[in-house]
Image 1 (cartoon, rainbow, N blue to C red):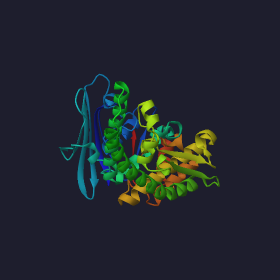
Image 2: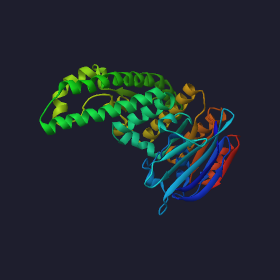
Image 3: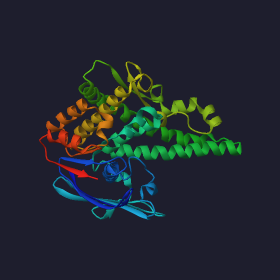
Image 4: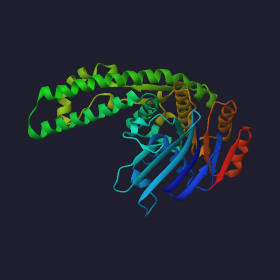
Length: 359
């Protein structure tokens, strides 16, 4: 599977642009702020129905324009597939496959397997647990449509339960029977989501450890630790135990919506105890593990977007990535960098076909 062509209309800084791609390596080079990352983000947009960097659709429209359109032509299983994402101010975003609009964007997730590696990934370390949960959920959802539907349903019921807790507090009443309906539903969905997350981490860890060792070549020990209330008991039991607290604070304080993925180095949080270089290596290993996991589970090589490659890696580590390209581990690769010569020197060593786009 690969992206053959993309056309952008009023997307971010582009009024109108079309790019035809090589099936193997494509490099966007030029000064900072010229739009290299925006092209990569448009590719991500076609795979996921939203921007990686700014999920608010209205903020992806070029200034002083009313709409944007991203039109991509893929080859998948020897068939042409056209994916179009468009948005007009005041209207709903539209996502189409071969001219037919999706009723639910979630039906599209996983159709175009894709992994992005970006300086923005640092948020996985510095931000709160929600960012890391989204990472887990995005990987599993690419491969398991039922999981994504469970997540959506869980979130709806959670919102309803929280609204009910607020209603009770406002009206100085309490109805056990009504609350128990939501508790039962959260229990069933929460347990299923918990089991799938747990299984995912078990299967994902060997890939992560392998890539971290390959990138760093070091003896340092890193850990990914799945943290969940559900290791302590069922959602139903925990909701009952925390009922007084939930009524006081007027929202649901326990459940899989509070899960986290601890990033550790030598048993300590990498956020506090890891150097900048160690943190970068950790994140690269995480994303390459995502790539390999998705490839194994889906049977397809995901498209790999490598934004600002030298922000993440020194030349030694970039050369290790290049080795992987030579070993045919990757499918189609997109790279952005500020130095054209440096980029071309690296891709030449792969002995693969490539295109360089000077922006």
